[in-house]
Length: 243
View 1 (tube, rainbow, N blue to C red):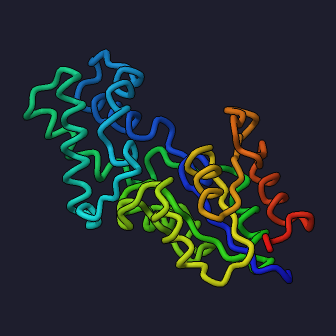
View 2 (cartoon, helix red, strand yellow; view 1 turned 180 degrees about the horizontal axis):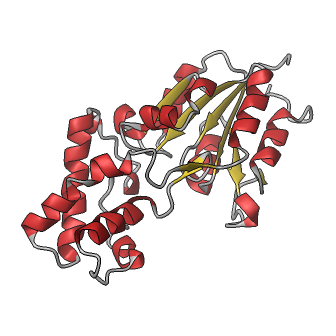
């Protein structure tokens, strides 16, 4: 195609999913420890609404841009959640320490949405350049590789290693640095703030993916109910690069 198109992709909820994410992972570990625990995922999730890096995206975290440092912080936060659920400090730390290996295991819980490979290949065939930008763990590049998607992307950026959570401007700048010559730059994702409004504030055209019509947009000007429809928007001749 004649246009120099670059696409920045979100990961969780857009290309792949792990149902329940962090709270689901904790529930699996608790259930393995005590099958009769009686704790629900909603109880766990209620204790995870604050305190984690992605809850304060306005604050860069360069001190955590090393995998061991990031996981030490996460393990401490998760141990605090487990302690508030009633586990002793020692047991809470032991269970929290298991999250690292469990969460990043591509064979446990993670699945790629069925239409993803077809749409990524469709863009690749048109020589569009593609990058992942996600608020995620340090091991995201390896996870994407284990899920069989790495070859579609020029780079896989995770907030754990770049020190910025979406929608901080630094996160989008990191993606721009991978696609410096793209004159037609887009972002696609399922978070209205992080993947549609945030990019728009930083000169990137955002598309909110409302898969199957769930979570309709409140303010996003571009949205679609399927991955195919989002790619159709990017490729539409009516969407010319801004002058």
